[in-house]
Image (cartoon, rainbow, N blue to C red):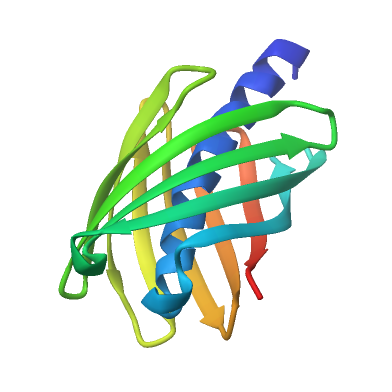
Length: 162
């Protein structure tokens, strides 16, 4: 895989992680949500290569917790950076929202539902789709993503705030 194609795919993956991070944070207590969260993860590409990523997310709640805005910055082990924003609306157990990755001008939508321990979600971007699960225990979230169309086999991210 060429270096440019690899970096473009990684940028799309990190934009997806932006949305996932926001949704994983919602799985915990709404009172604990606002503020700074951080964590590490791994992206496994179809060719077997892996990239470590470090992410810092800042969350803001509006409308009595029904609207969430998240700003996210991530850096990979190859020093590639991404800056993204997501906005979500919570309606009962349903989630709907949009995300936008600023550096590469990528965007998309997310739909899903809350479960007893987290979320089941579908993400659609300009050039990919993904299924994901989010599980929360205390102030830690584990996010597992299976994307299609990115040259990525799976993504696993752990975020925390405590």
